[in-house]
Length: 395
Image 1 (cartoon, rainbow, N blue to C red):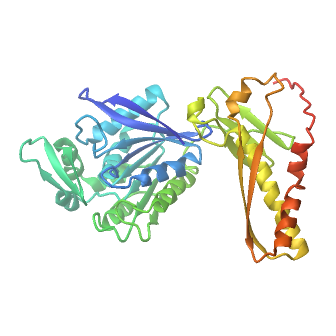
Image 2: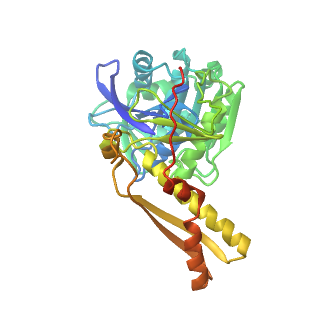
Image 3: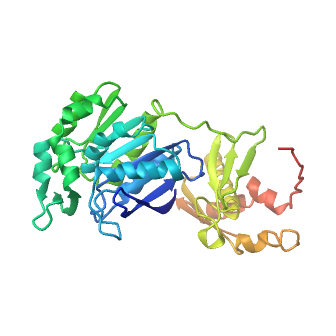
């Protein structure tokens, strides 16, 4: 994933922070707006887990901390801010197609969905929608009548009175009824902050297509990051049925391997057989560190071939080899060599291979395994100074 901070202005002219997180290959097929109330937690990795699940399906995610806890400026949550962010996205990115809301932000997304023409799917996570329940979580601010204080577990933040009135004074049943947009509802039966009957109310008043997924053993904040990835992955899979995704431009080749790079430094698609990977450079060398660098791929090839060769040999000879781990290093930085690609010095100088083996092996067996390691096919290819033949193919 690659992320970037953005700022937008709400209808009051106040600057608000958000974050955009794109897929690793920088290829976006759809955009999601994700408003959440996770930020007061000690561990907010669940946010990244949800984004990662979506990113892996080609969905870019713009996140808004609805609590304001992570914002540098003083912030009071309001559903109008979600609408302002959709306008920003339409102007600077692409209009969001998926609207995702957690907790109170789930209620905000429900009342906002019909006001955003581009929304093709709505998702709620642990959403609170019942007026009686909202009133337990929100109390009038004693110093400012335009605000309400919110207690959400151990988290404390403020929402505007306009937002409070919007989600409590409206006929929420009618609002849900009018939201003729595909709806996915996540809720845990173990949620002690927002009762699962809130999800029941959303589901019973919504039209099909609607889906409900029970989050077993999860709390209101999905504290286990695995729950976050599960949610993100399911949102992406479910939304493929309802959201108009941008057509893919898959990397195709008739050769064994192909790589492709566009204008983004230095994110490179790698297709080897049916398998896809991302290559990149570390941040200090101008990349985004979204994947191994080219030398690391070379080391991985040597290491994998070494381990496989030892496994094959041990199986053939009935040697009790339980596990092989190969640790590798290359002594030079890649970009230092890349700057001298026309010079004889631009080559792999020394590869350090450290082989860790486990099993009830004799010293003679260990010695023989080390000899076999030097005979692995990739090792031999590297030692034989292979001839590289380069041809131009018209684009």
